[in-house]
Image (cartoon, rainbow, N blue to C red; front, side, top):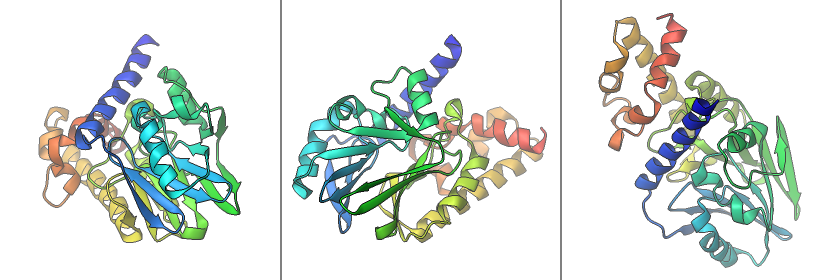
Length: 283
């Protein structure tokens, strides 16, 4: 059990450090996505801000140090308090602000995300959880949260704004290169299925966990690259490639994730990715 907890904590710490290095700036920026919907970017994961006449709903809350600045930015677009925070998953660059927001808001996450927080001794796990789907109705606005399957972790929530045809995918979407958190139930095979479930929703715009706002075609391209990189790994394993060579040999200009700066995909997701595909092909 001690080894398991150590693995979870290390995985979370490595991921948070990698993202911090990718988005080193501490100054946050708020930008409008659609009428009544904003995103706060900068250090940590992208925060969604849904404004209503009766309060604000946040999607994720970055690091603890970002709380005051997030509050200041929210105040620029609404005079209402933050009533709810939806955590897309447990990683500290998306849920670290819980330690502050739990005192003023209700925080909601998937059951597995909360379990991951508790197992990793993270501060302020949510008091409310869901297993399949849930919804918030506030000021005449509906915000839905779905669990659509494994992917980045085993507890990723997909947030859907039906009136705006927009989703917030958390780290199920990433504009540079994703991280498969095998220590917390991540799965590339599950990710493909989850992406197909997301694409069953009626949306034209998507907020990723990191990077610029995406179009539906960007989300399709993300799904396609996940399928392609799984196929490439399977082909390399079938050809006899050893685990030690995977990070180097999987690289190809045709798959941008494999060429991402600082090995964002390879160093974090391999060798777990190798092991997953090897099990699938029987090697």
